[in-house]
Image (cartoon, rainbow, N blue to C red; front, side, top):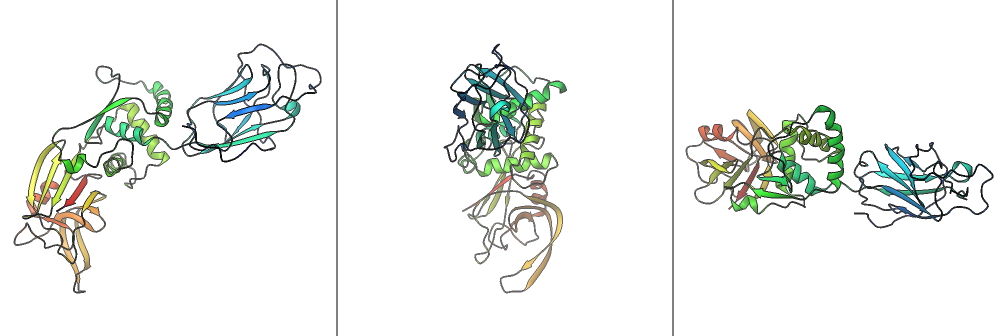
Amino acid sequence: MIGGVVACLAGAAVGYGASQLSSTSSTSPSSGPVATGPIRVRSITPAAGATGVDGANSIVVNFDEPVAANTPVPVLHPKVPGTWTAQGNSLVFTPATALPPNSSETVQLAAGRSGVRSTGGAALAKPMTAHFTTEGYSQARLAQLLGELGYLPLTWSPQVVGAGKIEVPEAALEAQNTSQQAQAYNPPVGTFNWEQGYPSTLTGLWSASQPNVIVRGAVMAFQSEHGMTVSGDVTPKFWAELFQAAAHQDMNKNGYTYAVANKGSPETLTVWHDGRQVMQSLANTGIPVSPTVDGTFPVYLKLRFQIMQGTNPDGSSYADPVSFVDYFNGGDAVHYFPRASYGWQQSLGCVELPYNDAEQAYPYLTYGSLVTVSG
């Protein structure tokens, strides 16, 4: 998972002291003068300039001679908790936690007496620096965790599953989160299974490894339940909250809702919840000069009541009281609006419902619920 080389090793001064060395060797460097012949770096992994690096992997610096047991070791910027070990001709850094995603890391090697020493006392002739950048966390792991916690219309389970829910002691959560960080780079093997009962308009949107509206809606649902800004953005803060939820098995409490606004004749809104159709209502969508746009969109704003304001096609203004409002695409929302009849184009882009049906739909259409407009 290591990207291509885009830079090279360069001379640099060391800005921080070396980390503590843990060694598998028992040979100490010479206490006399530095050897005439310098020790040379053969390779650094990840390679200098590499992008898309797996942040859970070790950092390895290979030399042309065996490395002394108590040699000064390279310095990392920014600092990373972990341990350097001397292993034959190599210095290996094992991180205590995976490096953050989409972050830059610098490996600095000092020269002379303050730098790496071989078992024969040889030292680097020049200081060296290598930079690399970690990749982002896996889209597949994002989908796995959201499915495991009930935020998708699919369930996910690892290849080997224990029986029942395992209670995790608080003291073990930090270690679990470390493991979650590593798995976010390298997702475990597992299986997604669709909940029965959803229409093909939903199943056709799914991808486990690519960004899609199902995952985006699930992210928004998670953000809503955890008191976060409902944006759909997968930020470092979002990942941290998701790791904690996975460690605690903090499941989705609202269930999964999907709705289809069908612009056929008659026009309808159908709602599924947890794989079961829970309601169908006559509905009104947008008139030809202000149509309800086709597509699938997550609910991003809910209002029990508001005065909806805007401009009519003839240029006049309106300010209408509406109830049970679920915005899903710009100014388009599912809501109650009083009409003499329903089932045909009458709105300015919204999906209008009779009062009782709008009231019934409102608690199902939680943040992140998907609304498909078609026909």
